[in-house]
Length: 358
Image (tube, rainbow, N blue to C red; front, side):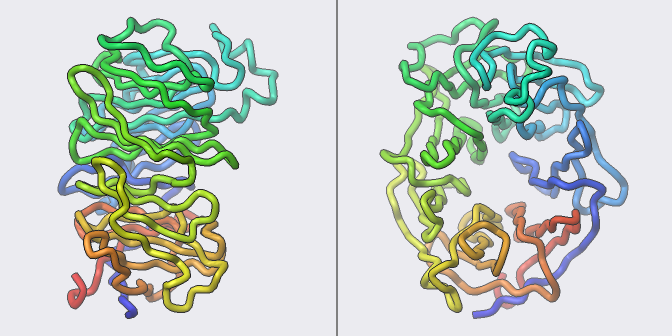
């Protein structure tokens, strides 16, 4: 079945990278966009009015920042520290850790400014919980200045990487656990429950480590897969969505509690798909059970890009989404029945389903 998307609005941002503000703010459609050495937050419904808030990048290489739901704080996962920064550029708190490149302790960026490997390092990631009260971060090694939280220390592993939960207000450590990984990059996916968070740690050709964590009074409890062949792409109220790492030929629906499989959607079964088609990593939530998901040639979001409406409760593809013109490969969902497509030239469009479907 062909489902014709209905255009709600379209505009162009003076930026390149665009992502959703996560966690979502009920009743608002907010996106985060890179603006030089800063990040800005825009309201999709009033994008022409300019950014609601802008946060400068700290003076070291970082991964993508997380922004608090109330737009009061941005947290940047850096080369040597997690930086919490206010909109005026004031450092609210900093949690230092060993360098992600060399594992050493740096007192100044001058120590590695001339080293090629430190200019484009592997990166960690961070995210705010749904209520904005905690920050979850994937870091390298033990934190250098923070006292250890209650409970046992993380289990020893070869990677020395940790998953740490901070209090957003002051950076105090609430919980931590080892991840048994050596990440080239990572991504957090917040859950509607502030105590729950998803984390995907990419290890390049070696695979991907997926963790679902729950913050308890006695520490951080996690569940994960036995192998490294799944990539986390969405986290719903009671389910998890993943695609295969070694060639994204299937999209699986898992139970949130134990990651057991409840449904599997093979890209080869989609109408008009060939053996080279695969699922991308772009999945946009429309509501608690419905998503728009992308496929393309080899799953690289470069050629033969198509979008599909999927129902994770029934475990079915409801149809192919068709646009009145070209749509960008990126998908951003707001959970209110609308989603964004973002193209390479910062062309952004907001869509909804036709009344016959929604």
